[in-house]
Image (tube, rainbow, N blue to C red; front, side, top):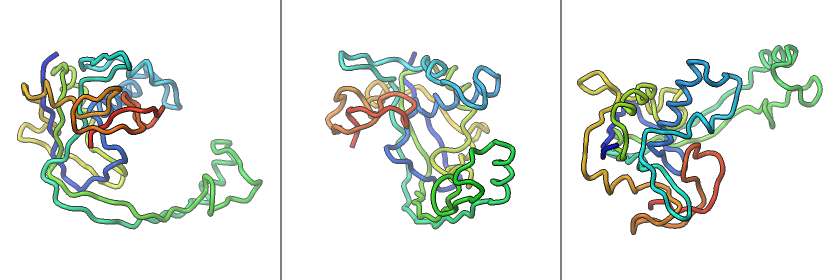
Length: 222
């Protein structure tokens, strides 16, 4: 394990998720994607906890719990925000066919409700952020991270709409990893079971991936 800086460059604006993005969360997603591809876990679901329990990072252990030594992603070259309006119509015919095939569970008899529930039409505003890219810091295994991060081609929410797409560096890779001694301190800018740096506040969240799952009290950077 060594102190590392990880960098990404954005090709398109990205949608920041609530609570930010942790580098270990991104790598855990990459581990899961690789496992899905090689058949280690089924595509129709399964418990990912064991798959993502051994990530290529050092551990910070405390009496209150532990976390990976990997920071959140920090935006570099922030250039403003914009709001987008999204609409989506429910594909009623396709949903009816899937109900008939028992792929989708039937709700409300033969009537497909487009106002609420799984058949609801979508109409929403969301925020996009313009930036040059991201940087993150960790104590980790350079070779393992270099392999796993090849899975990542976009970062943030609504990537299927083209948001958060990554731009290649001169070597053709969509990320850059370099040794950086400052990572021995900068990895601490992350959710933690204890207060690691002065610029942290108590909140409700997760300290390990998956970050969308179980929530508890923790410390998070401001």
